[in-house]
Length: 332
Image 1: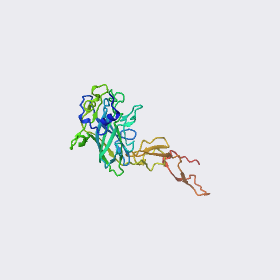
Image 2 (image 1 turned 135 degrees about the vertical axis):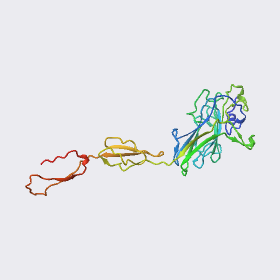
Image 3 (image 1 turned 60 degrees about the vertical axis):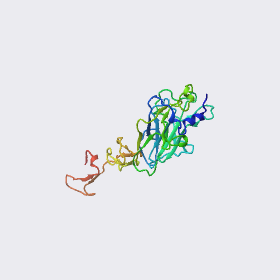
Image 4 (image 1 turned 120 degrees about the horizontal axis):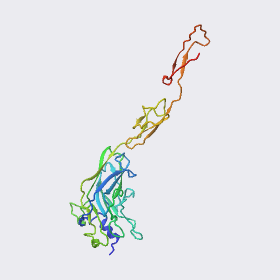
């Protein structure tokens, strides 16, 4: 018996209506994790107003996972979430992505390429997720051996820090999705659905039983609070100090930076250093040259064409930079 992909998707995607009646399966211990990163996937905790923030939602283990559903809570006065269309997909396809991935791929199949995840902005500060992904050949989970979820995020959400966001510490948290659609059989006061489910292969006798056994529950409740924090800060670019562009006899040590922390001064003349940006600001490159100008000797003797009978001639004068003179010899 074959199950059309539309049947599979209706069972797994949308708002995961059947999760609440799946049988529990005692497999590996699963958990969900949150990580705040930059556009390159590097961990980052400080963001400036107007900057993009990428939230990675991952599972600690991917083996056996075929579907998930959970709710993300965030401060909507600090970050804005991607807009979602009426079909439950991000209007900007880069707003929510998955490296798991939640996509049905089967050569020659009319539904190949279909996105098998949905999101819902149910209320300000709440974003609901659901997704499903099975092996198109076996009907079971894609990953059948232990596979770390660290590098394959279930979802990557691109938030933007609002331009008027005040500085401070904020956070994201995950919780179970609560469904209260009475027309779908849920109580008006709501019922929590499991967070992660699996899928048995087509050779399993339970494969045809969509109501009980085909999709075993892998994570029915979070073992502990899942959250992460980030900071909104004001970035400032580094600014060189007054020593920048001047000439010195020795390595400059003062007035290196007006803004930011100075690096070690490099070189033997000319000299260079940087003033680090603050909170992600751009560093400034600074330079000072060596002073190769010699000292100026000014002397005063007799007036021009004057005659003296003294055997000793007194000379008076001044040197512009005594620090450069080690010895002065006057030949007469």
